[in-house]
Length: 525
Image 1 (spheres, one colour):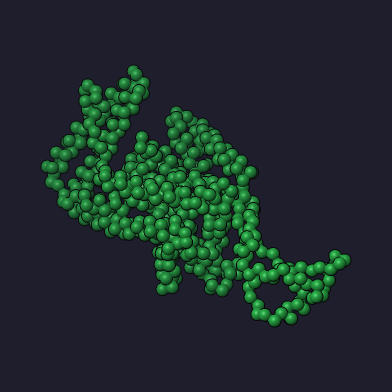
Image 2 (tube, one colour; image 1 turned 45 degrees about the vertical axis):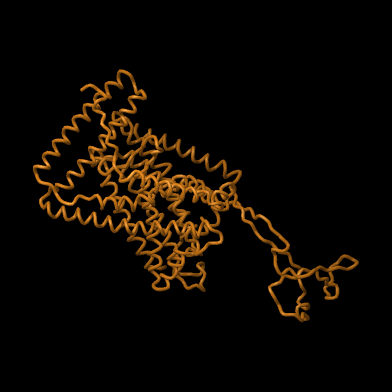
């Protein structure tokens, strides 16, 4: 076995777990601290599986390149069982998305007065219902349309006696001879004189001998195809938004950074103002509760509740900015230096992300959408990097794939299920409850399935011979009913459309700030 690849895989897998743990700690709500352990474990594994799925792609490429080109992978002693690893991570993806997440959500949100056993039972029943629905969505179409269709080009040829080949006076070519044998009795003589030539088929396309080869795919591959199709709906939204918003938000964060700290008297004045606003928000919340008890949740109540929630977000944002410009610790100067360095890192990350986003858009247009491709572009860059040093191409390839996954996470955190009407389960640092965590982890896991398929289409030349190309590049794109979505690039056109809309929205709206609407006059104080 290739121990270098195995060691790298283990180290990176552990590193991913620590990154996932940082996400959980950084975003969790204070009320969930030191509790809700089952949902936290599910969230931790969900983020880890999403990242492992992306990083498995460059591992697949490195594994394929571990042997010399003249040695097939079936005879290579250094190859890892990549197809089995792909199946394993996708089964884990589906298990977390459709079993662990529903169970954890309803276990977490169960009535606090319920016993532990009753909360477990509630989670199990909801998870079983989710599994049943997904099983029907997969099993019923699989029974009737669980086939992959491959267009094949055929050719017919007669069989020549060995003695006939010795008497041929012309040079051998790649032509296919067509022959038949005739005699009066109907038997087939073994003499050359009864051999009748029907001509030579030098181009199989001339005869248009075409057919469709239909083969049943495994239930795992079909389930992966269904889940990947659902994931594409999320990916074309989240990925497109993140590809634009990720670098722009980092650059704007640097441009709008605080230039200096404030004095203690300034801090006290701003803190008093925050306290006054907090009391007003609390009074408005009490007024809304009274109205809900007296009149119910009317349209006016929902509008005011949304405005109040906006004010609460503004209050939290202003509190974080106040703590930033007046660092409080044993060594405030050191903390301020770290803050300044963080903004400069955001500038560097924003510029790098902007370059990667532009490269991704060019790769989509020049390699995927235009047929035949104008240029392999990034594929050539990876191959030349491998020629310089084998690990360079793999690392560069992993950078582009991992950045795309970061864009999906960014789009999910920024947009959520906003749908231009309301936001479901927003992600906010230090204020995200576990139910929101679980919901967004499920969305990210679904989108990850499409991210992999998208990378396969974009880097098909570089990933030639890999297990993932065989699964996603051949089988999934040939399944009955679904292949037209992929072969016609429907999702990719939608992806570019959402990216263009995001560019227009970001340019018109400006920096990302919550609308500061005042609702103090809605109710009598």
